Length: 83
Image 1 (cartoon, rainbow, N blue to C red):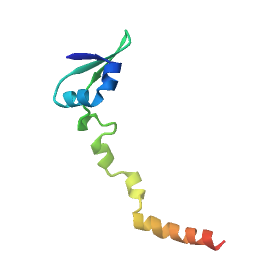
Image 2 (image 1 turned 30 degrees about the vertical axis):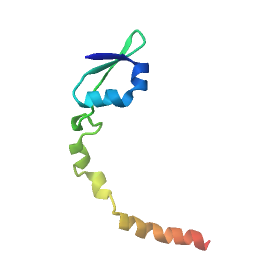
Image 3 (image 1 turned 45 degrees about the vertical axis):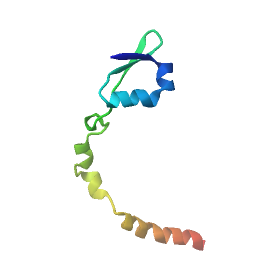
Image 4 (image 1 turned 120 degrees about the vertical axis):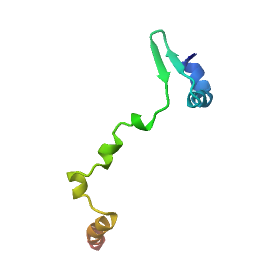
C-alpha cells in the first residue's frame, strides 16, 4: 500500500488515480490523524440501488411522456404570450 500526503495527491492526481485503476491501494494522509483510502467506485457502490431505480412503482405509474408534457404546457405558454 502506497501512503502519500494530500499535497502530493493534489499535485499528481491523474497518476495516482491511474495506479488505483490498475489495482494499487493508495492511502491519502491528511494531517496527523486523518487518512483516506482511495478506491474505485463500482456498480455495487451506487448511492441508489439499480433494481430500486428500475422497479415499477406508483410514482412511475403517474409519470408522463415528454410528448404529453409538451402538449400540456404548450397552451399555457401560448396563453402567456397572448396576454
